[in-house]
Length: 299
Image 1 (cartoon, rainbow, N blue to C red):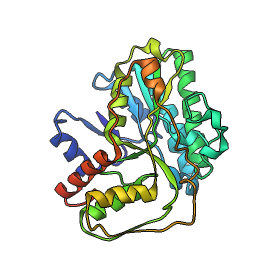
Image 2: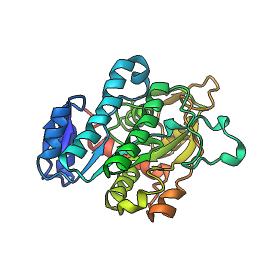
Image 3: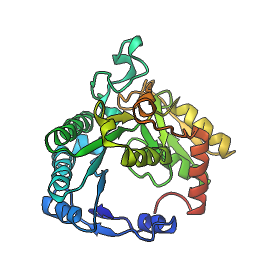
Image 4: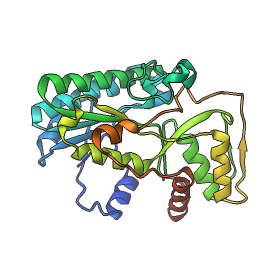
């Protein structure tokens, strides 16, 4: 079941073409508890993967909306799971719960899940909401026995990403694949990037992990490829010879204060999840191929 306020028809077509012909789409709003509860109680739902969230810059510009969707919406999902008898809820946290690399001592890097949560300076509403989401999930697990866990993804990239911190990467890859010029800023800033398929595999692993494995820790870093934006552009140019990409920079060390040096060791050490990490150029190549097959970026 896909529960979405405004499900994009092109995404639904893509999912069904990829083998999701049993996909059931329900139009609904996470800020309306009754709608979430109706969905949780219908169709034999045993687990929820909650991804609805007002992203980065928009959360800064529209804090009231961000609070309703990110805080109240997450509460509704957990409450609907409790009332609807859903056994497991997976939540998407973020590396925005951490501060920038420079805010930590050298011996604290790369950042593991026990590092202090300073919140990314450029995404205060977004990052603070993710910290609250984690505490709320832990509360529902302790008080009501829900199996709650989640991921702290690095910046997720891949074809079809239209919003969020990696939207700039998606646009430059789409434009390069289509032979169009592109301009990208933050050239010297470092970013930690993770391919969308890797994150999907990690969520699947959390869906099947024994709940007892979440006793010590519930939220896990995804890890990622750390590079500068300029290095990202160089990788795209290697894959698309002749790509016309202009890179600008004001000397920014990072994007929005997001951490770039992170470890994902806890996933394997504590959950036994051995993931296949997609190298950056492999993920970019898949993005380029998909963009060309689909005639560019997402409709």
